[in-house]
Amino acid sequence: MNSRSRTHVIVIFGGESAEHDVSCVTAAHVLRALDPERYEVTTVAISRSGEWMLADGAMSALARGRDAVPDRLEAAGRPSSLGEVIASAANAMAGTSAARTVVLPLLHGPMGEDGTVQGMLDLAHVAYVGAGVLGSAVSMDKATTKRVLAAEGIAQPRFVARRADDIAGVTASGSANHNSAIADVVAQLGLPLFVKPANMGSSVGVAKAKTLEEAIAAARAALAYDEWVLFEEAVTGREIEVAVLGNREPRASVAGEIIPGREFYDYEDKYIGDGATLLIPAPLSDAESAAVRNMALQVFRAVRAEGMARVDFFFEERRADGSSGRGFLCNEINTIPGFTPISMYPKLWQASGVAYAELIDELIQLALERHERRAKFRTTQR
Image 1 (cartoon, rainbow, N blue to C red):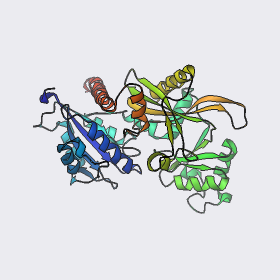
Image 2 (image 1 turned 135 degrees about the vertical axis):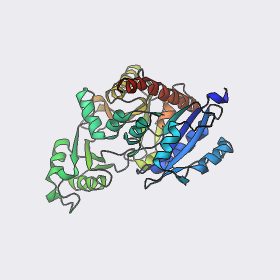
Image 3 (image 1 turned 90 degrees about the vertical axis):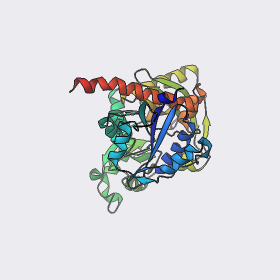
Image 4 (image 1 turned 60 degrees about the vertical axis):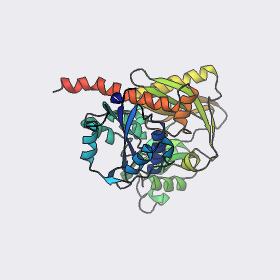
């Protein structure tokens, strides 16, 4: 490939959310997979406190060869204002061999996956990988996701969302006597139930509550991450995941199944221990596999996702009381899923015939396609 046709890729990693460390690991693997014959790379780090930096260390390692990139990038480097980063992207690094620019925001969780960075990039008229502002924001807020799915008639577990102001006493004494709102939730959903912050990912802040007192404590913990708390019924079922790729004509990967190594698939099971078992493809019948893949595409379209997403389901074959189950129930959608080679999203695509590096290539092309398609609307609005 002619060097003049290389694409300038700006990899943004780190971030202010509790998923900062996950992002730093993801970014290292993506850098190793970017073909230097096709891409000119700039790495931008965001510290835990929100400082933007040009990550010179990561770029120096990459210059020595992809094998020199460490397993985890450090969110450190030369301080850079947000304006400088945007200008660099908008001008495609004037003087380099890059013909066009795409931002790859590898930022999991709030202040990265929730539409904030996406809105900034839209204002700068820069192409970027993944969902736009609306799809990102709707998918990040689990309570809003569930309301959208309900409006679309997509099956899901029963849920209740409550704002901090509505959960009296949780941030103060936490006494059951002062938490009639949570008692009402327990009465609606039963026990056990899951409690989680509405805006968070990677199972951060998620707890399974088996008593009212545990539900109160879990709500108090969830409020450390967000002002909205989501309560969900506990479903007895298998955990099935499907990866989606595309813009206007998305396609679904084979389905995979996760067998947790702990009571549920929590943060430690995902990133620290190795107790979870991944079954790819999932042991489903042809009809079941087709059904869950089609459902994943329904969810993807319902929330206005683009580029990529991983859609997670419960497969309830039987209820806890032994009665017939409800089938596939959508748990959530992640628009910037875990992206290391051993993460479920790339593994599902590998099993579907798309290798890791090829997957990144396609995501970059999808970003450019979406950017060009949306550009005509900016022109007509002037």
